[in-house]
Length: 195
Image (tube, rainbow, N blue to C red):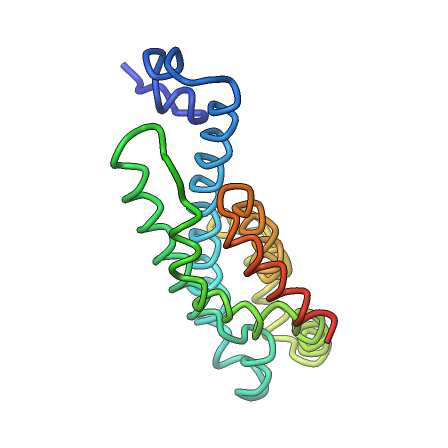
């Protein structure tokens, strides 16, 4: 008999727990559950990028600076996601109704500074990637082949490189659960992007 796939927090928690929480708390728990589930997907994408794009193309690129410009601190972003995933899963394992996750982000906010190295340079990364594809046939052919590979879920390198930039808004949503974390991110990104 096949095991039923868990779709969301309601499936995870079960009927007994659902009857004990308010509608507002249920929505809150669904948001927490979604954040944890999407963090897991994000981590898989980071690892996939490293395995099928970053590592194999090192020798194909024209120089180390090109590799750095395209991928920046990919390993650090992967480490952040692994750490965050571990902490979130540990918290979730304590009991089905997670009281808070904002403290996890708040206690580890210094690690999110690594996104300031990657995210603001995403345009430069894209331009460098496109230039390299125009001038490096071997690189372009490899990327084309991987784009249609099931190993990469038939996604292009551009999709994977956009993932960290797209992840930041998810982290910002945690601000709903933690007043301190909200102000940290608000001032952190406001200062960075506007000054």
